[in-house]
Amino acid sequence: MELLQCNCSFLRSATRALSLAYDEVLRPSGLRITQFSMLARASAVGKMSLSELADLMAMDRTTLGRNLQPLEREGLVQINVGDDKRERLVSVTLEGRKLLACALPLWESVHLRFEQKLGQRESEELRHTLKRIVNVGRELSAENETAIG
Image (tube, rainbow, N blue to C red):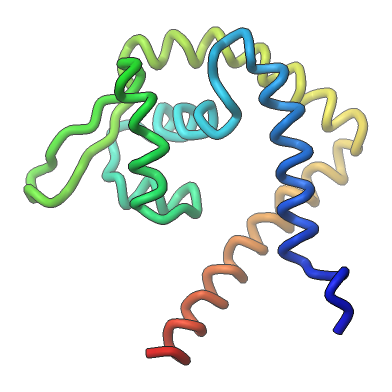
């Protein structure tokens, strides 16, 4: 197999290139695209456990917790203990919702330009394919755990 055809490497390169474009546009808000995405998803869903948000974002819980720390320090999210004392609940604060509202037009501008350049139909197909890739990645991880364990 040709190593230069690595699917993961191509996806990571695409993610880095696109993240840079989104980060540059979001810079006036003080948010990076990763932070914007966490705020947007948590805001859309409402209070949820750290594990649920991690699953929604296809991240491991520890990485999500680390990435939420700056948002918590800035008062944009609140992380509280759930009914089960081991559970942590994430919610977006009023300040977080205000910042998200200010950042939304910036995000929309780059999102729309991306869709214009790639094409509306292609953008929808890309999102569909990427959702499938997330699921395939999860399946591969589960298979790896079974094979190793």
